[in-house]
Each structure stands twice: as structure tokens, then as C-alpha cells.
Amino acid sequence: MSTSSAHMTTSEFNNENLAPLFSSEKIQARIGEMGAEIARDYKDKNPLLIVVLKGACIFASDLLRAIDLKLGIEFMAISSYGASTRTSGEVRIVKDLDVPIEGRDILVVEDIVDTGLTLSYLMENLRSRGASSVKLAALLDKHERRQREVAIDYLGFGIPDEFVVGYGLDFAERYRNLPYIAILKNPEVQ
Ligand code: IMP
Image 1 (cartoon, protein in one colour):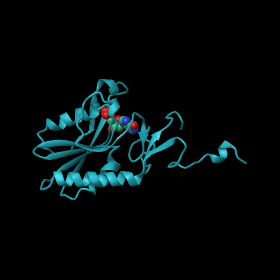
Image 2: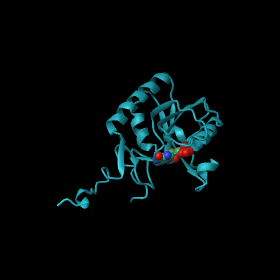
Image 3: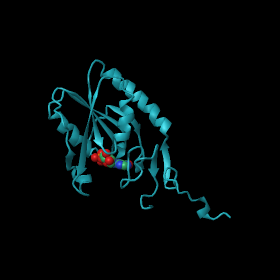
Image 4: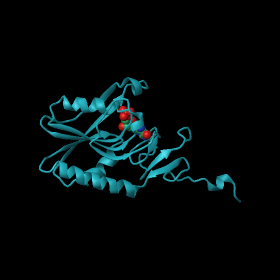
């Protein structure tokens, strides 16, 4: 019997609301290249990677292992002030660094740069703390949506103006565990 329900899947990783964009193999290959480039640029330095929670944690865990250097990692969590943040650019540090960064070479690790409001705030904030250098590694760049310019020093992939999930990126906390990156076709569908 071929009803539409017979084709429905209950798989979280392979459901009909997800349109695959980057496979896990493609992500790993690109991260390998990024890691090699970072290792070359920071040769003889001891960079401190600052991972922006929560979205960047999966990307960061793979990127770290692709950088053949002595390095450190720290975590920060940033939050927006309610729904108006998207346009106001007001952001708040929810979890700050546990260490001073004066004189350190900082590499911020972020999942996606969208409007750029969060990152422009964060990069400026870190620079004001006296770091020697502050650079950015981002897995995805949704450049069409940019409101504030942010220089991405190491970029995984540019993407179109679509809402994406997986590999750390969520929709209402769902899909972070997806091993690949997909376009969420209809966010209304649960
Ligand atoms: P920005 O300040 O607009 O650049 O926002 C960046 C943050 O918005 C990212 O760290 C993500 O948490 C979130 N975000 C933006 N676009 C997407 C998306 O397509 N999927 C999931 N999260 C997104």
C-alpha cells in the first residue's frame, strides 16, 4: 500500500524537513584545510582559541584537532537581549573568559556569521582587553544578511540566505547533533 505515511520517516538525521547542504565528509575535508592554514599562520605562536557557545562547540572540537600547534582553548557564551537584538545589535556576555588575554593571540571560533551584530561586538570587546591579535574562524558565512562588517580570517563555506541546522547549529535547541549541515525547509514543522 502506498500512502504518503508509508514513506514518512521517524529518523531525526534523515527527516523530510531537512535538505542536506554539506556532508560530514565535506565538512571534515574543509576543516582539515582550515587547520593547516591556521597552523602555518600561527607557527611559533601559542594561540588561544575562544569558542563561542553553544553552536561552535562541534566545529571547534574538530578544528582544534586539525591544528598541529601548542594552543589553548577557552569558552564564552553570548546572549541577545530578547527579540529586538537582531536589529539593535545589543548583546550580553553570559559566560565570560576565566583568564586574562593581554598579549595573547586570540582566534575566535564561531559557527556562523549572519547579521554580524554578535561578532562585531565580541571582536571589539576582546580587542579592548589588550590582546596582541584577534582573528576569527567561522564555519559558515551568510553574507547576504550582513548588517555590520566582520572580517572572517578563516572561513569554511559561504551559504545562501537560508536557515541552516546541524553540526552544532540549532533550531530551538534541536538538530545540534545532526552529523551534517542541512537547510531547514520549514521551521514551522515540528
Ligand atoms: P549574527 O549576530 O546575526 O551574526 O548571529 C549569529 C548567531 O545567530 C549565530 O551564532 C547563530 O547562533 C545564529 N544563527 C544565525 N543564522 C543561523 C542559522 O541559519 N541557523 C542557526 N543559527 C543561526
